[in-house]
Image (tube, rainbow, N blue to C red; front, side):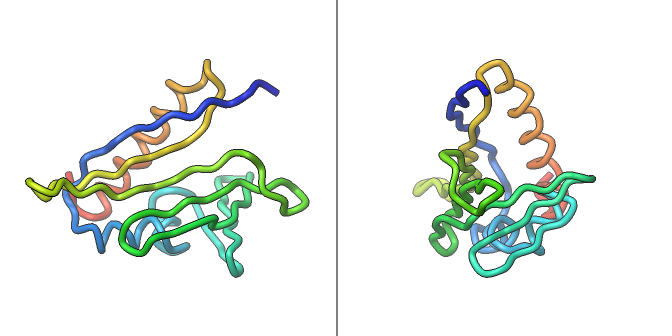
Amino acid sequence: MDLKVRYEIEFPINSSPQLLYQYISTPSGLSEWFADNVNSRGEFFTFIWNDSEEKARLASKKSGEKVKFKWVDGDGKDTEYFFELHILVDELTKDVSLMVVDFAEKEEIDEASQLWENQISDLKHLIGSV
């Protein structure tokens, strides 16, 4: 398997940080835009898309600000890969944006970025930030 590289994308979102946080930190919020279904048991989240599912551990969260999910292997052990959703608020303009930190193989970064753009577009429609 090729080594994955870290990349970041920032999306402006017309929303309050509090509302946005509900959609990025709860199974019900995430299942409305990120995956077909999301279940959680303790710190472990299961993300379900069509017929595939991936497990991740909620590695860290800062209320109203960010969440970080670390992907786990079949034995429930952390892998080196994670994705992080970080709400940024400009101090002067109060503009809100969502910073996505993720990993992909070098030749798949464009495709992975496009996937995030589609998912964030769904999120924006959901919260009326279009």
